[in-house]
Length: 112
Image (tube, rainbow, N blue to C red):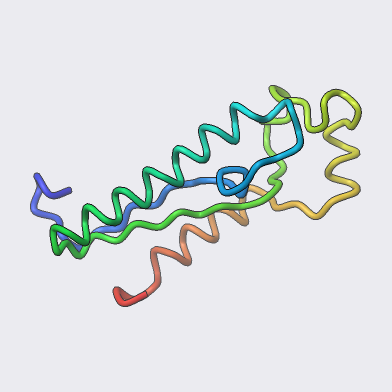
């Protein structure tokens, strides 16, 4: 952005609440670790841009459980609960909820 002379853009990282705390679900430790890296990268980038007096904003969107294909790769609770059981027994978001959050973020005024 800076190389192209953009100084009022917005960088949005899609994170997860799993990147902000430890989870007791053993099958998602690597996922949580990668999302924690997004948390740290977001804060580091934000501080770097502040130091440069940039007007580029950085936002991290960290949803909880979202009904996506990730459950086909990782087991929600070590093989004891299926995706259907997890979604039936817990509140969850849909992909559209995340895209709506991105659109909302892009529509906020520069001071937000």
